[in-house]
Image 1 (cartoon, rainbow, N blue to C red):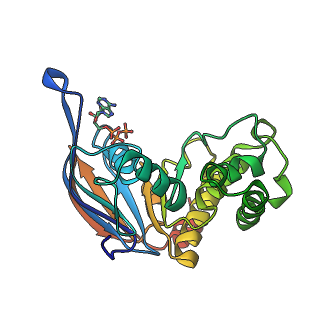
Image 2: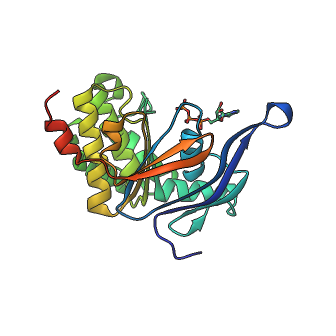
Length: 242
Ligand SMILES: Nc1ncnc2c1ncn2[C@@H]1O[C@H](COP(=O)(O)OP(=O)(O)OP(=O)(O)O)[C@@H](O)[C@H]1O
């Protein structure tokens, strides 16, 4: 295991399909996200943003290249070992929350721990702690259908940070939310990276959302086409007259 913390992506390529149908979604992407750093990924539709995120999160296998999460090379591990790294170290936040309707907030958040063999009582305790961290410990026993969109996304974030997560991947996490609720969700992601030294990657179409990141990378046709340091402080943008 290499001693590199955070996320390291080297020469990443991903070809979806084969023959005449083959689509080269990523063409040699290099990216390092250090612990505590939040990087935004922007780019036109079809430029490879989601593919980059799913490869970084071990949900998709790259065609070539390396993906290291806290030194664990997802491209050389067995499928079972990748799944274990995913459950223990990687948290995902999606646009549509992906919560299980039949489970309460605490049960949804505890699920990745329980799947990983953590005893139910311990998992539920950690789930309650994660829900408290995103300020919804009063919703522990509530079902997703009885929550607002913002509350559901907080549950999804709690599920993504529960336990000892080291990498937080968010794909348009504010897409289904109004702008105030969306900003609160981004603030939460930012705080997690700052306070817990988690490496974060945020895919977004919105430059105001990208302003929460330390760095923005631009993808075009599967390549990194440019990079900028942080935009003006997000709080300043929020306070600016509309
Ligand atoms: N499972 C798949 N099978 C075939 N082609 C795919 C698959 N997933 C993605 N692609 C193709 O790979 C390219 C990159 O897709 P990707 O979803 O990563 O882009 P994106 O930047 O996230 O787009 P969007 O902003 O629209 O979500 C696109 O041409 C897409 O059609």
